[in-house]
Image (cartoon, rainbow, N blue to C red):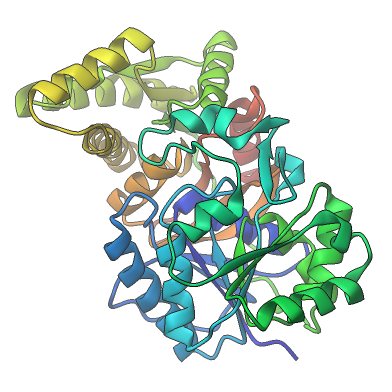
Length: 428
């Protein structure tokens, strides 16, 4: 019988994403935000620690993942999963190494494909909605620009351990053949990346790898793994949400991805009031405080009227470029500017929530989700229901509220509108 499954995720939305995959199989999944003094309890089938380390230095991300893995090891987890971005952004080599080092292991299987979200791996080459990774929108990522598509090469540049690949032809020969190939790879390599093009491929992969101690990659494989695990899920503690807030739903957007741009545009077009944060005013204390007060006050008034409200950083190209230029003149790098904007949005959110007692919140953007959660004292959440592929709702830990934390690059154009309706239906 499998004990608790321990997961490390490098950002908040990714943590919820993989929690959702397990919860779709009636597993109870709980996300907790990492801190060095955290005390874990085995009160869920899947325990996920969000290290929020994707934007950290490689050295800091290693330390976080090492310590978080030790926390999971201490409560007796029987298997471990290192959840990464589905296009390998982040400090993947350091984080994979940290988990192996903490566990005293020397082998992990990696599945990065996420077919339902357009991520496919064939012969080790990763594509996003049919485009080579190096030609996708992730090429322009401000922190981790993805300039190549070969997953073995990407990972090998970040680790001194050895990396290999098992291709799609082997996968499609079935789980037994694949398992034999993995065992052969284990003799000479530390990391084994496995191709998948569609969900059926992932089912074969899951059958072959479900009993390996350390798995890594995107969340998609976690939808298939429970089919092969000998486990009796615990009863869900989420029987009574008791959310009866009459205010509108607040949506916070700090992401500049094309997906989130289209989602905020759709929400505005549908008539949801929009408060725009001028990112050019986050650099001086007086201007920043004026922006916080302006946006917060107008938002509170609308929410108390029962209206839904969108608060977003100004995503017009000219404003984004001007913000970067102001930062450059002040010696501030783009990553730090992004964090300043997220912190300002978090301060506004805290002010609004404290003044209104708001209990329904949607946040778009991985870094913004993590920053807002920490500001509100949210220590994690139980994963509730799937709204759209890879995008669940949650019941917050540390503050009584329903939340949706959305990865910037996930979701259809009408996702934010669906998320609002979803939270309202839950609170009925």
